Image (cartoon, rainbow, N blue to C red; front, side):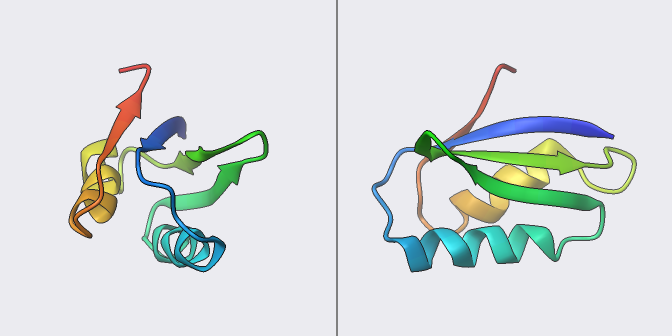
Length: 73
């Protein structure tokens, strides 16, 4: 299992953030995905790197024409 943070540059409304969380939580290999409590631009993701890559998770967001990057990589 691995953990990563994704920074989303755009200011999104709560429904859009919940949609992204829901989409990522339904990917095989993701065990948890949620917005950081103290920063709505940061999304925490716990995942199994043998089933899904960090780049695939990032592309789930950037494919929506949002600007995002992996933090700490």
